[in-house]
Amino acid sequence: MPTSSWRKDEEVDSSSLSLDAATHFSEHFSGDIQPILHEWANGKSPTLQGAMVALPLIAQETCSHINATGDKRAEEAWHQFCSQLNQNSGFILTKARTRSKS
Image (cartoon, rainbow, N blue to C red):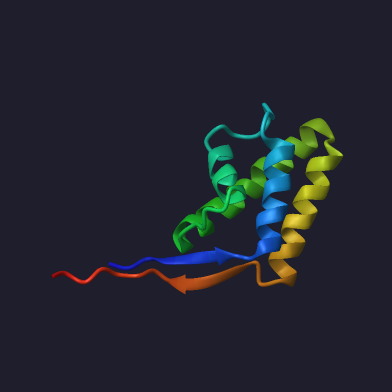
């Protein structure tokens, strides 16, 4: 069964890289969610299902980090990430390629 993925906009890649850098060593950011953000920051495009699950978790962990630390760099990175998603159609839905059986 083919899966859909989201191709990320260049600005989203840049802002996710900033967000990843700002929260990377945070004890207030889940160690389970950080690798997902790190993959996105390094160019991996998530599946549609993966993005739908991960985005709210990344939001929750980012807000936890910001609230616990007052980290202005993370706050600005989060703002940029959200802005890029809204302004530039940050992700473009694409159909995954399927392999035909020979």
